[in-house]
Amino acid sequence: MTIGPKLALRQAQSLVMTPQLRQAILLLQLSNLDAWSVVEHEMERNPLLERPETADPPFPAFGAPRHLPPPSLGPARDPGIWHDPPDGLAGPARPLHERLAEQVRLSRFDARERRIAAHLITLLDSDGRLPLSSAEIARTPGIDAPPAQVERVRLAMMQFEPTGLFAHDLGECLAAQLRERDRLDPAMAMLLRHLDLLARRDLRRLRTLCGVDQDDLAAMIAEIRTLSPRPAHDAAAAEAGIVVPDILMLPAPDHDWIIELNPDTMPRVVVNSALTLRTTLRLRDTDRPFMTERLASANWLVRALQQRAETIVRVATAIMRRQGGFLAHGAGHLRPLVLRDIAEAVGLHESTVSRVTANKYIATPRGMFELKYFFTTAIPGRAGSADHSAEAVRHRIKLLISQESRQDILSDDAIVNELIKEGIDISRRTVAKYRDALKIPNSAQRKREKAFEA
Image (tube, rainbow, N blue to C red):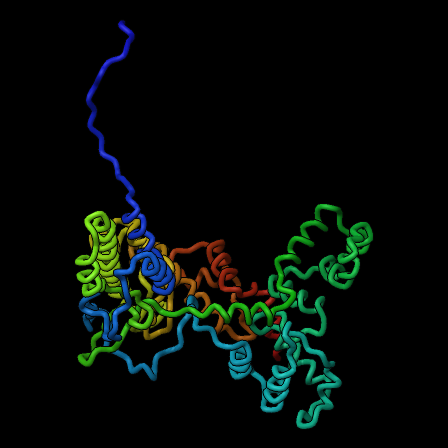
C-alpha cells in the first residue's frame, strides 16, 4: 500500500448561506412590527430606499388577499356579534379593573355584594393589596353591609384571576396562590406566618417551626419564589405588551372571508427610481459600482418583502381553511394539525412553515390568536372514530367542569369516563395535565370552593 499525496475529484452539494438569504429567513420569522425595524435599518444604509407615499392597500403588489370558500368556514359573521374567544386568546389585553369587573358580573354575588365588590376594586393599590380592613370598608358610606359580608366578598374575590389580589398582606397573597395550586399544607402555612424569619434567613428556626428538614424547607422556599408577590403590578406589566395582529380576516360581501396582511403594520418600501437616475448620471465611473450595489440591494429587499407577504398569506389561508370548524363553532371543533400538513398543502418545507407561523398573530372572528395556536397534536378516537385535537379536548374538559353542579363535582376519573363516551381515548394522567394547564384546581379543591360559595 503506497502512502503519499494525490489529487482526486469529488462532487458534493452544499447550501451557501449568503447575507441576503440569511436576511430573507430573518424577515420571514419576524412579526410585521419587528420586520419594520429591519427595513428602517436598511433605509438608513441605502439612500435609494424610501417609504411609499400613498397608503393604498398593499395588494396585489405585495400578494393578493386570499378568499376562503364559504362551505368550509360558514357564512361571514357580523363583526359586531363575534363570539367571545376561548382559551389561547392573545392581546390587545384589557385593563385589570375591567377584567375584575367582568369576573364580578360572572359571579354569584347578589346586588349588595356586587356593590361591595365594585368598591373593593377601586381600593386596590398598585400591588393588588387592600389597605383597609373589612370592618373599615363596611363603614364606608354607600356600602351598608356588615363586616362579615364584606369579608366573604373579599375572600371570594381573592380567587379571581390573577390570584392573590385583595389580600391584606404578603402572606395572605402568597397563601391564596398556594391554595390554588393545592399546596397550602400546614408546614407551608406556618412558613407564610413567619416570612420575617425568612427575610432574616433564620432557616434553623423556620425548620423547627415548620417541622421539616433542610431539603423540605429549601423546596418550600423555592416554590414561594415562583409566586407573584405583586399580582396587580405583574398584571399591569403584562397589559403593556399589547399584541398587534399581523394578519386580518375580513368579511367579504359574498359571505366569504378574505385573509390579508395588516396594512397598518406591514413593512413596505420602494426604490426611488428618480433619485437613482439623477445620481447615476452625476456619478463618476469609479463611484458607479457602489451605486449599482445599492440598487441591487434595494431591489432585492423589495422582492424579499413581497415574497414574505405572499408566503404568510398562503400559509395563513391554508391554516384557516383546515380550521373552518373552529371559526364556525369554536375551540371544541379544532382539528389536529401539524406543520407537515400545511407544508404539503402550500408546497413549502416544514421549517419554512415554522418560521412563517412564529411571532405572527391573526385577528379572527373569535378573537386574536397566534398562528401556532392552531397547530395541535392528535388524541386518538375510540373504535375507529376520527382523531381529536388536543386543544379541543382541553376546551371540552373546561366546559365539563364549568357545568358541574355543587352536588356532583367531577373527579379526573369521571372526566375520563365522560370523554370516553364521546369517543375520545384519553388517560387520567392526560386529563390531570390538561386541567393543570388550564389552572383548574382538583376536584377536592373545587368541592371546597363550591361549599364556600353556598
